[in-house]
Length: 544
Picture (spheres, rainbow, N blue to C red):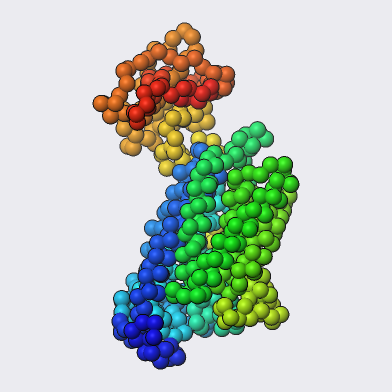
């Protein structure tokens, strides 16, 4: 036997509709260790997604979308423990939903009770409490994926209400239908190894619904649109891609729920599909726009990972390569179609995740290998996969659309024009990602700012030392910028010599006409204090 009590595990695995015994001999140390690690890997994907999305948006809303991703870790965990896990894996009610009483507040689970009825068809080799925790990590990232579609267009209060309702009415039912042993799609024979339907189709088509409810982003001009849609930090995108790729090994590899050969196939297939999709996307983009881009390559890798997800533990590596190759063409085409149709899916959640999950679920129908995951390819199996994709996509779209309309009745979803013009980071959260950029007073209400350029929204959060103070303005048009405070032992000498305005700054200065003139007193240079003692050169149009 692989571990103590394997014979007892095999004996109990055939028992149906019987709560598992409390017996530590049924728990495999190796399987438990792998799923513990996988939990951490999947949780890391949400911060990775925050960096990925944060780099793609404008600098005035980067904190907003990062906050939306991070808060899902808190809100979703609470919903999952109180009711979500019970709805997803509780005792069945007609193959549609689980009983809320089965695992309320994670009762009926402990370290020596293996995963089993009603969450699984037989007793597993990991503790049930670990299974609940692992599935919670999937629930966390699902609503966070949706945020990329409505970037710059949703108020935080409305977002919080929406994700609670969406988890209960869309995500948890999807989990029960596909992954619960008595869910009607799973019983019918539909397969989804790690979340092509449950996570990617559910989130991708909810994202599509959201863009029709909130509408497109509004810009003052085409120049403003181009400026606001340029990714503000491509290095964040690369960092986020790396974290997502790393975490996906736990997302797909851990979905075997054991440290075994199926987990190995899932891990290898995931990396192969991502690699092939990334390279193929790069060449498609190179042929299309004339240059290979970092962002395009990163999006291609994510598309490959999303598409292989439903098939990772059911196919051989050659199929993983094929899936990655087809994915690049399919998802790239969806992104171009979205642009033609003028759907303002800001970060292409539908094209990459929604359609990626759908493509992978369909391709599993004719690429599955019975020796890998116990499911062989066939026309009948493909038909079931197709029906499941269409049905779940429609359900997610319609229910998400209705939920957003209801949320909008309770609290307005879309920020008003002045909030968007000021930047959602400032207007919704009262903070900026980059303190080297003065707030543009010309885009705010005159009554919102005092004569020193300080926002009333900042009164309780901004230290007095960091607030602007009035100083005499020389005859020559000049300005200086605030620098981060340094410890006293490193602080350079005080300087107040003004820095001449660049052409860009003079244009910005003209926008302030009719408002109080503000001069920020600061150090014109910042010294390195890590072994080098040269002043940092100031780039034209930038503060340092």
